[in-house]
Structure formats: structure tokens, C-alpha cells
Length: 367
Image 1 (cartoon, one colour):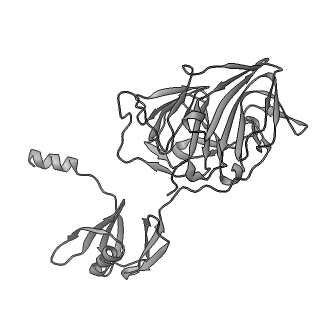
Image 2 (image 1 turned 30 degrees about the vertical axis):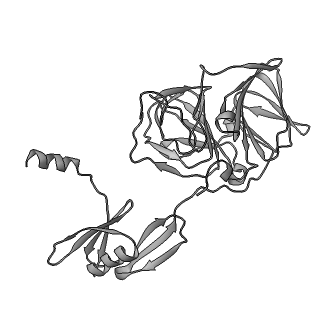
Image 3 (image 1 turned 90 degrees about the horizontal axis):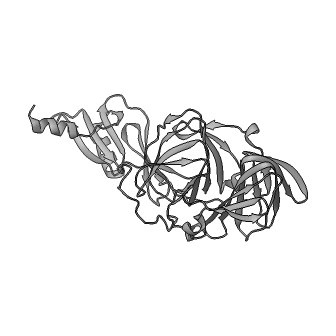
């Protein structure tokens, strides 16, 4: 093999295909080409073809003479109604609309959900464990999750992005190393730090400490996570100033954290997320000394609130009823409702207010 042959062989991308046996190769090729929009790559051998390869988008099909079986090939078409076509050798092409971002109607609520001691965990993406902080998810409009990785080390993650309107990552315990598109080298989020992930910003989780936990809040609750096939991270030597769907990246940490006295024994810290999201979300931390109280007043119509006890223990009073509010617990409040938290031994609370009063297309195109 010559040097140029070797270089070509090493540079040739490997292909994963679906093997489909057919009894009429020519008819199957024409059906996939003409009806399905597939591209023919090769047939073999030329004098009496027994096999062929076709592809469309990320789907590659190898046809081979054999005993046919029913085979459905799903093809995504943007803004196309669902339909199907039946072809030779048991082939069926099912055309489905490309997945798109949808936002369910918000179901407002005022509720108190239990803390860490009563939490139920399940395994999600990349081996991470998840716990629903608001099981109702405001009718599917907003998700609040506690996510943990119990063993420290590298995370089996990959460069990806989310088709979403708003997404907050708050480091609750330990630390996690992450890297983001156009934000320079990887950096570490420590307990008390947070970032917002603007819509479709490419990112990756790299490493974490033992017993790492984050709080993730997203709008809407269900959204696609897409793998980035081309970009590698980091993708630049220094952070670049830019926006994604009108939102800018925010990294809130010890270098940007400023505490202001709200009342006796109570400090608050604004994360800067309100400005970065053009008013879509307001995120602040509230720190209470032992026996201190903090009042959460009403907000504007259509503004949904999630308040999480990051650490500490206390009590919450709503509508004249007092209940225990422990670390990992969550409060949701209707816009017109109010609540008062009383700390027993000291407490930190994370408050997130999301503006759902506007049509989602106000925040980004819904296509």
C-alpha cells in the first residue's frame, strides 16, 4: 500500500448501517430513491447486483438479496404531516415530523414538596441520578431536578445542546468541571455557583467530585437534548461576547457574588440572570441566619416560582399554615400567593421566577 493509499484508508470514516434483506434489489432501490429520498452510494457486483448501500441524513441502509421481512424505515421531515408508504419486499417508509419545541399550558400551584430524606432517585442521561423537586412540573411546563453523581471522576458525557427556552444549573454540593461554547477553557462550578445554559449553547460535563449535586431548572419541562457531531470544546482561547436566542451566558461564582442585607439576619444575592435572559427568569440566593425570617411576596401574573432549600432547616408559612421546610425541600407559589421562611439553624434558599405570561415565541422562534 502506498503512502497516499494509507492516508486515504485512515481518513475514511467508518459507517454503521442497517442490514435489510430483500428479494427484488432493483425494486427496493428505486422505492427508497424515488419515494424515500435516499441516495444510492454503490451496488455490487455490477453484472448481477446482490447488495447496495443507500443513505438519507444520518440513516444508512445496506440492501442484500435474501428472505425479506417487514422493515419500517423512519424518515424525519421538517414541518411535514405524518404519513407512510409501503414498498416491495416488506419495506415501509414512515415520514414523521421533525421533533420541535413545544410548551404545555402552565398549571399554577402552591405546594410544598419533601426534602432529601424522602427523595426518590432514578437514573438519567450519562449515568446521572435524578430526583424531581416538583413532580407535577407545573403541568409539564417547568422541570426542577436535583441531579447527583455519587462517585468522583470523569463523566461519560459528550458535546451536546438543549432545545429549550431557559435552563439553570446550580451547584449544590461538591464541584463539577464543565466547558461551554465560546467561553474559553473548562472551569469548575463549586457549591453555591451557577450558570445559565442559553438555548442551544454547546457544552459538556467533564469531571466531578465525590457526592456532587446540582439543581437544574428548565422551561419547558420536556425538551430535546441533541448531540453535537462536529464542534469540539473548548473552541476558543478566550471567552467571546455573543448571545443565543437573545440570551447571554452567565457564570455566577465567588468572583461575581455580591450579598446585600435585606433585613436583620437575611442576605440576598442577585445572579444577573434577569438581564441576561431579557427578563425571562429571575434567580437569586437568600441566606438566613438562625431564627431569621424572609418574606416572599406576590409577583406578576403568569410568573411561576420555585424556591429550593439548598441547605439548612426551617419552617415555611403560607396562608396561615406553618410546615417544616428542610434542605432539599421545594416550595411552589401561585403568582398572587405569599410565603414566609423562618430559619432554625441557618438556611440558604434558591428562588427562581420564570415569566410564562408571554407566548413562548416571544423568547425565541418556535419552528
